[in-house]
Amino acid sequence: DTAVSQTPKYLVTQMGNDKSIKCEQNLGHDTMYWYKQDSKKFLKIMFSYNNKELIINETVPNRFSPKSPDKAHLNLHINSLELGDSAVYFCASSQGPTANYGYTFGSGTRLTVV
Amino acid sequence: GENVEQHPSTLSVQEGDSAVIKCTYSDSASNYFPWYKQELGKGPQLIIDIRSNVGEKKDQRIAVTLNKTAKHFSLHITETQPEDSAVYFCAARRNSGYSTLTFGKGTMLLVSP
Image 1 (cartoon, each protein chain N blue to C red):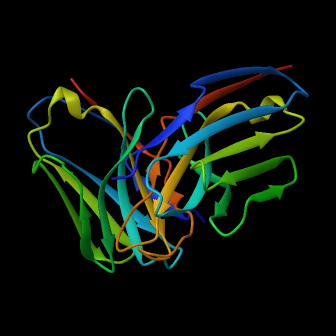
Image 2 (tube, rainbow over the protein chains, first blue to last red):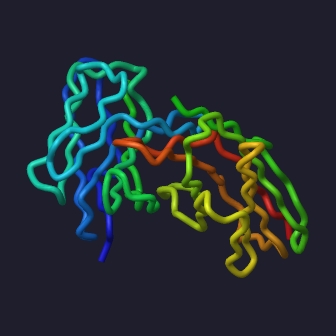
Image 3 (cartoon, one colour):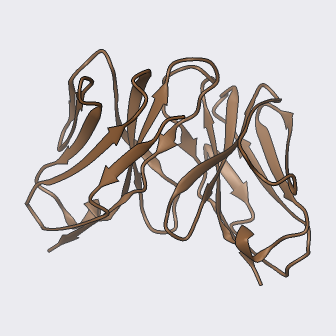
């Protein structure tokens, strides 16, 4: 009955490879997010989608491409992986893009680029 | 954009003591302030939130206070227990357009038995 589920939980890959992370929420929320948590635990917004539409795109390299096939799913594809991409990536969802309600986070995907 | 400062970065207390974590924000238009708890290997979990129309909110052993004039808010945990040990994040969000939560850098709380 996981509310926000991400796969895979761990991802180890070599520099230059392309990889994808998938996220699904069963809360009926309209808005989904990708956050990056670095080694110092800092959480930084990357993207936000509302009903499959991209609404927020922070200064993220264009090697990162999110896709939302429907409002319950948000995937993240990363091309030409670099060492600096190593981090934990969290998917989250909320009731709406302007509603003042908390986010529900997934359990994260730990990406290690070697 | 919004900037959220959080202090301290680490906090060690004895079981049964109180713990206080403080945050300041820069954007006076921010009006929603949640707190998250992140246990090892898990995602952040919402534990309490406060909106700018109230000054204090309490839920059992945790409470949050907000001072809009000074632009700071605090998390108070009383009667701490070892299972309270985790990283705690404050966040702020402005109520205009499509804005997201801006997080503080986190406080690692260690409660010793």
